[in-house]
Amino acid sequence: MPLEIIRNDITKVHADAIVNAANSALLGGGGVDGAIHRAAGPELLAECLTLGGCEVGQAKITKGYKLPAKYVIHTVGPVWQNGNNNKEELLADCYKNSLTLAKEHNLVSVAFPLISTGSFGYPKDQALKTAISVIGDFLLRNEMTVFLVVYDKAAFRLSEKLFSSITQYIDDKYIDDQPFNRRFVEQPELKESYSDDPMLFSMKEPAPAKKRKRSLEDVIKHMDDTFSQMLLRLIDDKGMTDAETYKKANIDRKHFSKIRNDLHYKPSKTTAIALAIALQLNLDETKDLLHKAGFAISHSSKFDIIIEYFIDEGNYNIFEINEALFAFDQKLLGV
Image 1 (spheres, rainbow, N blue to C red):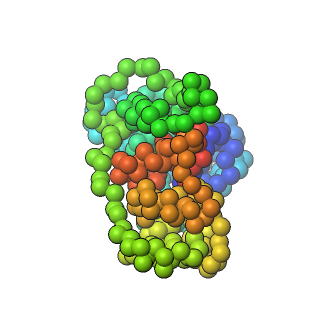
Image 2 (cartoon, rainbow, N blue to C red):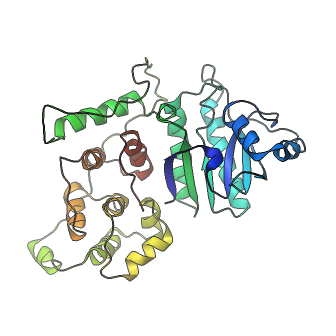
C-alpha cells in the first residue's frame, strides 16, 4: 500500500528509512528523537556529530545502525508557539525534503512520525492535515511505500468539524441490529476547545458527483462483464491511465497488474472501493462496480457509511478518506 497509517513504535518499523523528528543540533533529545537514538545505539550520535546540525524544515540522512531500518532521515520541525512565521510551510518542508532525500537514495519505503506534535506543540489535527497532504501529493507522482506511524490513538486526531460531521452522518444513516444501542468511536481529546482558525482541516465544497448516462441497452450489453472488464472499461471511459488509476486508488503497480491481467480477478472490498474512489464514481456507479466483485454498500456497516459520506461530499481524495477511516477504527482503502 503506497500510504498506510499504522499504530506502532517507529523504532520497530521495518522500512528502508524511518524519519526522526529531531532538534536542530541532531544530538538526540526526548520523545521520538531520544527513542530512535537509544534504539540505534551510540554509533548514530557519532555520525550525527559529523553533520553540523540541521535547519528547520530541512533533512539529513544517516545509517540506521541497530534499528530495523537501514537509514534514519533526520528532519527538524517547527515549534508551534502561536503558529506564526510560516509554521505550516516549514512543517510541509520537513515531509517534502525527507521524501526527496529518500528518493535520491533510491529508497522503496519510509516511515514518518507526526512531526512537531510532541514537545514542539504543533496541533495534532493540523499536523495530520499537512502530513497527509504532502505525502499524498508525492505519492501521486512517485512510486514509494510510506508509513505514517502513530504510537497511540491519542497522537492521532481529525479536526473536530470533520469528526463531528462524519459522526452525525453515521448517526443519521446507521442501522444497528439493536437501534437503541448505538456506539460510536470516541475521538481522543475531542472535548478540547478549538478556534475557528481556517487552518484547521476544512471540508471541501461538495462537488457534483460525476454521473455516467447508462441506457438500458448499455446495461444489458455489459451484464456479463467481470469486475476486471468493467473496471478497465470505466478507466477508458474516464480517459485515465493505469498509473493515474492505481496511484489514486492507493494500490501498488504489481497489484494493479494482477487485476488487469486476470479476467476473473476477485478483489477485496477495500480494493474495489479504492478503485471506485480513484475513478470518482458516484454512489450508484460505485454500487455497480462493487456488485461485480460480489459486494454491496450497507447501512449496517460504519465503514460503508463513511465511504458514502465522502462520495456525497464529492471528496475523492483517498488519503483523506483513509485518514477518517483510521480515526473511526475502520479498514483502510487500497490493498
